[in-house]
Image 1 (spheres, rainbow, N blue to C red):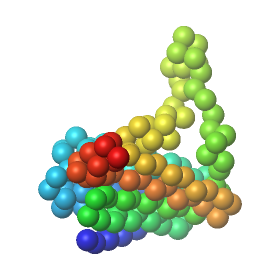
Image 2 (image 1 turned 45 degrees about the vertical axis):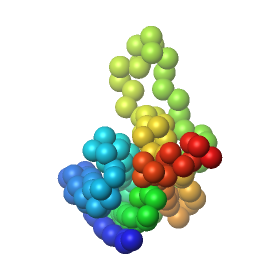
Image 3 (image 1 turned 135 degrees about the horizontal axis):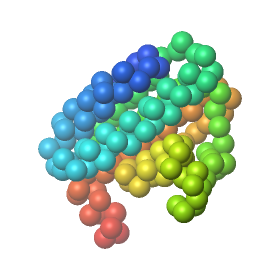
Image 4 (image 1 turned 90 degrees about the horizontal axis):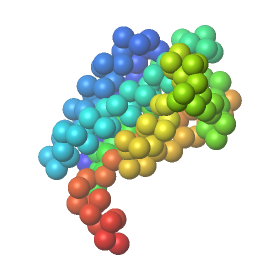
Length: 148
């Protein structure tokens, strides 16, 4: 159906713009419920926040690229950065809920949250950057996959 590409500076004040563009693209598919659009908006916000952090850590002035591709049965969003990369399988675990350090813990929730909110969440990362691909299927496609 169509693709939209947004390039934003790696600064937190651009997160709202990224969320709004993705939500507007998803809303072009009339069968997406508002709740699913909100899920996608939050997942993209997490991916973009991680990208901003990667650019900050790498002192990169490059822009973060967000691509939205609306197909007949899904919306796919890719968030791409040029940070140092990381091993997605080696993310730090949060302290146990009862541990006093848990109150100060601010990392480690974004990737699991993306995986819960999107129907598919894939992360490809190396020393040239990270690409997060998020997919949310239309209700008809979700039913087809469940039946099939």
